[in-house]
Each structure stands twice: as C-alpha cells, then as structure tokens.
Length: 100
Image (cartoon, rainbow, N blue to C red; front, side, top):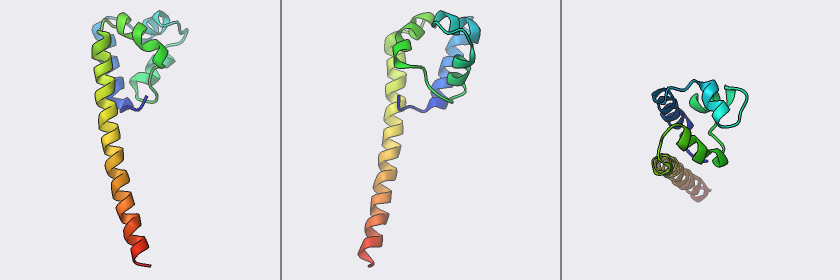
C-alpha cells in the first residue's frame, strides 16, 4: 500500500482503543500470535497486509468503505506529493542539461 503509514497507524490505534481491544487481542483476532504486528502498524513502520483489511475492518467495527476511503485519501496525498517532487526534479534536471 502507498499511504502515509504514520497517519494510518494513528487511525488504526484510535479505532482499536475505541473497540476496547489490546494490541494482542487484535493480533489474535487477525490470526497472529504476537502483538508486534499491530504495534508496527500503529507506529507507522509498516501497514497491514491487504488480505487482512476486511477482517481488520470487521474486528475494529469500521465499515470497509471507511477503511477504503482512508487508504485511498492517503494514497492520493502521497502520489500528489511524489508527482510534484518528480516534476520539480525533472525541471531542475532539464535546466542543468540546457546549461551544457
């Protein structure tokens, strides 16, 4: 997934706490034996695997549409920022070539 993992992690942490689950409880609901997976997601180190998103939405009582919207919005922001950076880099590179 191409998202701001930090913001997505904060979103997941808030939803987990509101659901009354510990990281270990959520991890076990998703088939993991260690809470480290959930901790990594919440700290923005990585995101959950795509094949866990539906189960994650059900366990945290978040509609799949809400989860999908969050992911799509974050992906759009990320891509817009990257494309702006890429455009700037191309302009700088082009200027350097024209000076030769």
